[in-house]
Image 1 (cartoon, rainbow, N blue to C red):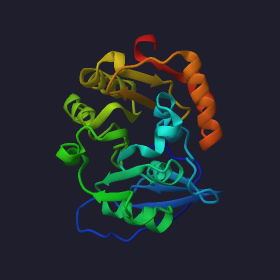
Image 2: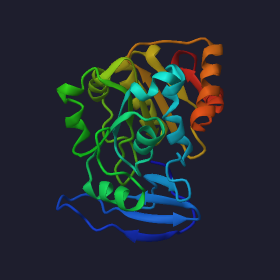
Image 3: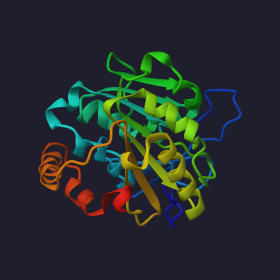
Amino acid sequence: MTPARPRAPRRSTVAPVSAVALPPVTVSEEGKLRHLHLGTPWIQGSMRVDRPDDLALEYVQRMMAWLLFVEPETVPTRRALQLGLGAGAITKFCHRRLGMDTTAVELNPQVVAACRAWFRLPADGPRLRVIVGDAAHWVQHPPWVGTVDALAVDLYDHDAGAPVLDSAEFYAACRQLLTADGWLSVNLFGHRASFERSLQALAQAFGRAALWVFRPTREGNTVVLAQRTPSHPPREVLQARAEAIRARWGLPALHWLRSLRPLEAA
């Protein structure tokens, strides 16, 4: 989720596929960018129409910064889970670009329909699953415990005031899903008090030594990473991995190193 653009774009509405009272999903375009909305001007996700598998938004790119902490050769053997589908950017990137076994959980079936119709989200297959369900329930799914290497959490409603699941108990359940060297990436957007509450809940669940914090983007999104097992690789290791990430997947990983810090040093 990121703030809306100032220009009023073209908009179309995706027909509801469920009787559940959820916000209507709308799609807008601005130049080569296509945006997903939940009935408001707030942008819930974006895609470059000419490069649909790229990560168009800066904060979404930053949610992939867990790649700095694993060997690039191991990435295709790992498992990704996304809570809150948005425009499907992370799900597509993990599945298509990184070659990971990928699952996404999304409460609103209209969002899934929109991603398939407008945002090039592939159909389910042996290594891709999109589940319509409540993330609060699915983080309690016993078969997932200890199996997720990269967990992306971006859970906002149509008002985009604060994360809809943001308690220490929720983050503790997220932590239980992670492998020993697994990572949680969470998008925190909202006023300062909201961010501080979220950070406190994350610290309670993971411990302060396990948290890494980005500086906010221009739009106000702050991405926080949390490790199942705290680690602080040497700067030269992070530098080498950043260069590999840029070369393999085209992500601005060298820029990440300038704005990503462990919480204890933030």
